[in-house]
Length: 320
Image 1: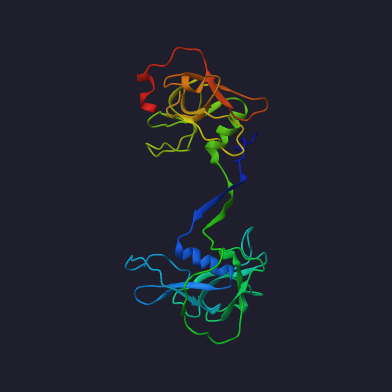
Image 2 (image 1 turned 90 degrees about the vertical axis):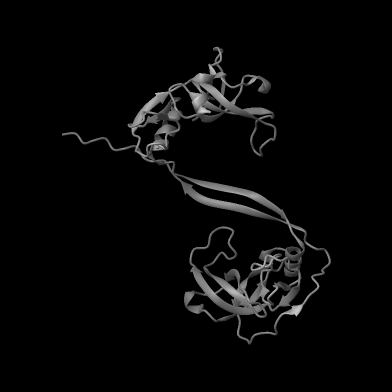
């Protein structure tokens, strides 16, 4: 008696998406961040007299522009919190800490930041805390290293501040980063494994009989599962394209080049691919192309013209 073959293992891999986010600052945010550099916490007074920290430039109720800056205390009260037992890379503290909303003395709203505490049993709503300033400050929210427990009464309320500092911070660059584990699922795992064998495999819908490449595991039109594997291509037709004139970082491709939608023979969905082997200004809709593989490559490096006559528009117009 033989046992049934086990299904292929679904692929998984760690993935990191990161980029520097650059933004300019208006007069309110500029004063707020510059103030942090100088160990001064600024808020803004709204039209109804409330003090918001961090400050905003427009009243959240009336949408009026607000510019009345005030200085609040560096001590405050925890309004709510959550324990973070496993800090991630880039978070304020490397050891377990609490994320806390802290209403600084003189403010009517709370600011979110890390609270350094030995354990969740040491944190409570209503506890008094104070700012722990970073040793090196540059004009960023990280100038507040974290909050720490503090025994003491509330300080005086908000006092007017002109927002003037030497060497005003006018812009910031924030590193945006997302770490996660990506799995392409059953259908695209089969697709990726086939590409490593220099084959392109899609899936056919059992209802409308369309072949989707790359496969999605279900027909987007009928909503039914797709399990019937169909090999398509290798040649295909350029349905539409764009000319890329901006060089991407860490991408060793000279500009300009062409990126296109390519409908492989036998497929009912166009995929993306770079067009090579032809001057960029000669690429056109209907151009017949074939994949080019590099030594050891797990997917086509680019597509090049086959030399066949261009496809008739009616043959691919539904795939544009």
